[in-house]
Image (cartoon, rainbow, N blue to C red; front, side, top):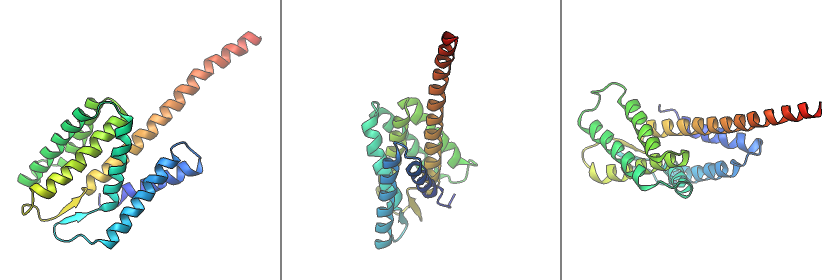
Length: 197
């Protein structure tokens, strides 16, 4: 997953919400602006050695983390448990890489499952996912010095997986809400028609 799916999806969501004048257009516009400023910082500060910093992605994650922090009630417990899962994945990959096939997918699905079951909300899940990955970046940088040969911060797979998952999940939530509102309006309209007859 080295292709920048996450960036393209964010840009596409920004354009769609702006054209359709959705309420979320300002959120996505800020997100795209923050990503662009992070990309400019990336071009000015070249990362050297084993640590390959993606400042644009990190800036987006910090912004989304802060945005989710304001919109959720259960914060600390989901963040701790998902951070534990991410740290387990890092330790596993450092010690025995490649032992379990599709380990990145298994750990990503486990991470989402733990985040959702502990937070029980969309923004709580985002808070837990973004926060645990950011915390793991700090731990990787300071704990695994001299052990790792190359590290993308954040990991390319988890970045693309997270953006795709959260955009699709958010779109399905909006679609379901719109469908439920229309389903509630249809019976009331049909009863009004019957009363008129």
